[in-house]
Length: 604
Image (cartoon, rainbow, N blue to C red; front, side):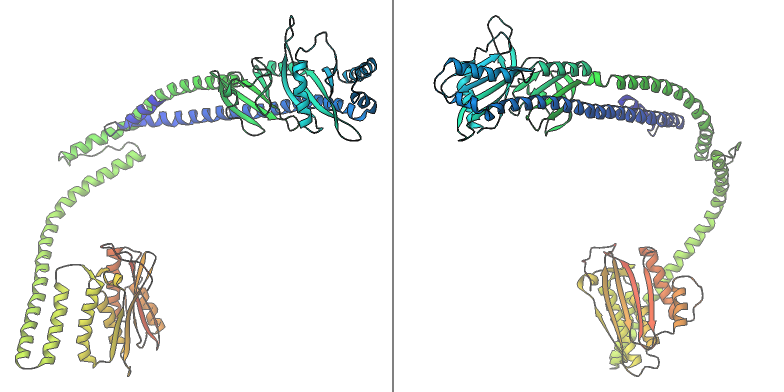
């Protein structure tokens, strides 16, 4: 699979032909869906098998444990019989061991043995070292004396409650060993509730073994039953019955009371389903070999793989034919382009079909005709360019000449002690110098405000200080790069139109606000304002929605708006709002931070 991917990737190298790329595309478009569908179907099939198997085995285990719990419950009921027999308790508290005591206790033991066919034997111990029992088989446990003290201690520690003992191996000389699990209970006096003896009920593993063999025949696997301390109650392999589990790998991934998990045991992959009984605390784990469980799914996968290979071979043949026919016109077009690159413009593409290649050939022919026309136009453009360069040079010479002339007039006024004319000439010279200085398109807001201050100082001579202005801008905004000559035309409009008919001094204020990634600079005046109909027409004119304007000031605002949009983008520009008798506010929307530098952030 990795080799196929590398082969397809090599087809898309720069030097690969279009035909090879088309073949790779066809193969990729066919292989990818088939492989994806096959993989997804296989995984869904496997997941469905795992899910159904888990549900089924959980039910089987639950039924098995229910039967096992019923057996243990019957054993617990049998251990209760001595608690309700006063006659049996009287014999147990009797220190002497006579024939009557033996017969009576033997009678009760026989009665209890007959209550459950799966039981192996019942043992009753008194506190005088006597042990009474009746075996259902001919064999007798050889470990009874060793078990006596152990059983008594376990029973007393349980304080009258039944205790389940895990599987024990019973080894009898000259007989095959067998295994039992037990329920033990302390016998308490019905009146004083004092301990007077112990009862133990043994049950062989025959019932468990038969059920487990049936499950293993179905699953072709193995079964393990362990208690909370990992003592093995039953093991299909019969390696650890009655012992601690000797292979910890068999419990990898098993957590909680029930569930399913995949694991490897002795190099074989198994799907294990487990369930822990709430009554006994024993966990039953059924191991199903993955190869057996997923046998049908693997057959389906192999059949799908063979079908995929056959489809790919057929697709490869078809893709070669189709790609050759599709790429032939493109190869012709490539050869024509190479000829054009070598300087041959007297060629054309022969259009046979009206498909995409035909449209491309049509535009290719048009492009060649356009190239010929453009070659003729280049000579005219070069001549016009030279004329524009001469005009630009002349436009730079004229302002310098005017600035130098103003400086000469200023010096002459100083010689004649005319300071007012000298100051006006000096300020006008500064304005001229600002407009031509350095040839930069942008300046800082601080420099633009300085130019505005020079311009307003010059206007004060004309309007006799009928206005005042202030700028409230933080240092971060003062360092912002703005287009040159942006503020002055706006303030000029505010003074020329705002002072008309005003007898009181007009206040002009420049302030700013940063909102996210946008900087808004506001120029506000308290002049006469603009009538609504003129304001609406002016807004349309500034936005380029109309070509006519009723106010001379609109030309300057439209020019500023277009300059901002050209420099910063269509999202930015100039807007204007006004109210009659209250004044006008012009807003400059600019990107923040400045594209030409770093600025601080905040709202002001």
